[in-house]
Length: 494
Image 1 (cartoon, rainbow, N blue to C red):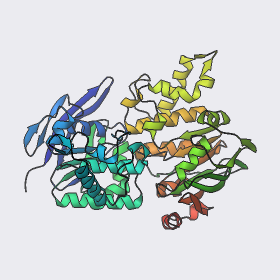
Image 2 (image 1 turned 60 degrees about the vertical axis):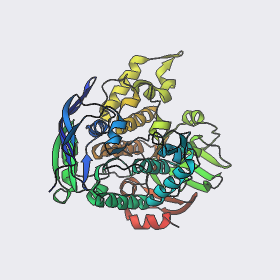
Image 3 (image 1 turned 120 degrees about the vertical axis):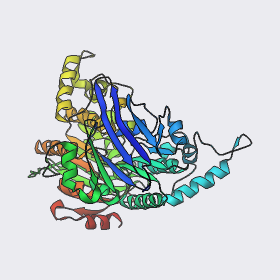
Image 4 (image 1 turned 180 degrees about the vertical axis):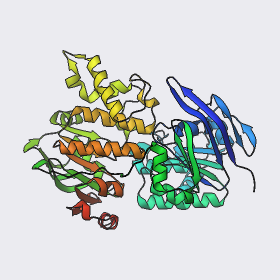
């Protein structure tokens, strides 16, 4: 048997106040898929940034095909055949899909960019992914799922021998995930080694040959996938037994709190009506692009509707902006935390305070002591891994960024909370804590709308389920306990 394609030995990396990697070893062979698991902040992304040349390790050595390498930049890693698809998108929003794919590796002839040739190659890449992408649209106009596919196509655009996929399926539909796995199998057959990072353990069981688990910057377990159970993976990740993925709850649903009537916005939202009761968790699900997020944006005032009415506790609301929605008692945990949920250049404390300034301020001045005290409680409650409250939000891992977004809305004490993919990129241990918090909010009489593509999450958390397709509600399941994934998917394709 030939030697490893990749060896990382004794990798150490520290940041101010945090030791991200503590002597981590990793081995990958050609044609192998290794699943890299761990809670948010365990060191997974840091290890991959070292491999991808975005960061340099403080200690340790790295070898490709037995030759020692030390990448000082992503360009050096790419030249060595390493492709990294990071969890957070790395696209230029104003450029098209084609321009983003070939940015920095343009196809040229005589000093001129060969636009037609780039388009042909890009079209072939998307055909290989089974995706229909508008090649001329700026990436800011693409959906989250489409942007993820652009990232994957971007990584496939050069002859990579080793590919890292960090949460590549987080925004993909079930069909797109199936196609992604087909592509991974094809890459394996060509001898390409793949490191697959995911919090979706069902996916890991399907795609991985071997599993490696990090916790607090250390390798705490490594086995062949065939020899590791789901419970073992969870226990290694969280360092304790986790008997149930969804906390038990006895719903106590009262009178309607949120009443949405005949919402409309072009073809995206077509005559959508529903109610959410006091203490109810209503799941809004369907395929990506079905109109779920568009409905949420209309309720929150982020988009202008063309018709419809919103009532809260019997009072008709006139919402023209998110500011007015927040003032009315509506909170919105957005799907895209990086672009819409956080100001990445500002501190964790400042991000936490933004929607809460009305009660954290007096006479135009923020009560910093109170702000820090309240934030500390949520940092502890949500187990947010952050060296200090003044740390910039952009420096946190994706999962910890999501927890900061969640914290600021929990502190707002809204009457209605809309959670759009609340556990996207969140590890299994933290998911349980978030689910428990959602249950507590419902028990306190809040009305919760949960938008989710994760059908186990929908079935495990919802009291009632609405399914959307092409901007319309195509089905309602009044008792989620009797629902099945197959029934939901039938309604989603109606």
